[in-house]
Amino acid sequence: AKQAFARRDFSAASFATYVEGRTDECGTAVMYLRHMLHHLRDRDALLRAASNDDLRLQIFGPIGAVVSDRGSLLKEGRQ
Image (cartoon, rainbow, N blue to C red; front, side):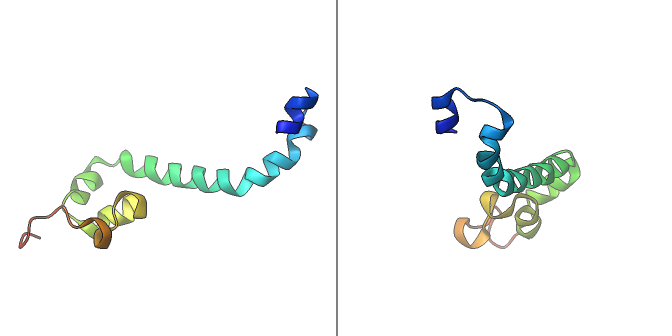
């Protein structure tokens, strides 16, 4: 991308290598975004996830809730 800017060549061919190098990265991000949007539209699942560590981990993945690392949102003894 830096070379394309230096040459002032903004054609698709000039960015082809850059785009190719980002395909997997962007594909993974889009897949995660679609997963999140699907679950964020499901109010009942979100409410259940507030008191269900396993469901919260399934919906949000390790970014939002790794129970062993971050602890439970449940009070001790209440499940």
